[in-house]
Image (cartoon, rainbow, N blue to C red; front, side):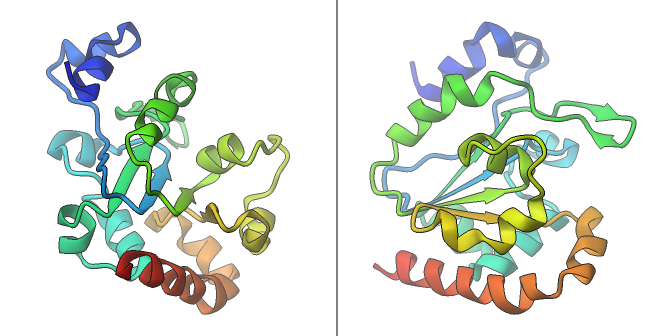
Amino acid sequence: MSIIDDIAADQMNMEFTKKGLRPIFHVSKKAKLVIIGQAPGLRVQNSGIMWDDASGDRLREWIGVGKDTFYNSGKIGVIPMDFYYPGKGKWGDLPPRRGVANKWHPKLLELMPDVQLIILVGSYAQKYYLNLGYQSKITDVIKNYKNYLPLYFPIVHPSPRNNIWIKKNPWFEQEVVPELKEIISKILSD
């Protein structure tokens, strides 16, 4: 049995498996970079293709890679905090289910022994991996991204819903994104 079959067979994922949905993630033994986000959106869950939406277009722009490198090089792994679309809530998508990362992320990361950088996309991944309290402000975390290097690089979620945040914080695209691109370019060119 493969890891994807193990995840699909996990009791916590049975409601999705019974609907014919597959867990959304990508691991590769060649991966040098891992992107950890929150959970697939409905469009991604339906297509089965990670970051196959406007958020993914912006993410690829921020990290300086095209679709071919992102999807076909094997150098980029993608692990969400939840493998399935969690549903719609009052203010947008529901948060990732608890327990998924604890149970499955160590096993997935173990399959990618050459990872040099983990990009933490959004507050769920950042709070989990950086052991932050719920009072932590994402703006402060991202401003202080250098504190988490060389392994972690926290960024804001590239969703169009964050356009207001991006406009209010022009330093992100002016200062942080160019450094992120430079680091990733060096890692992927090795």
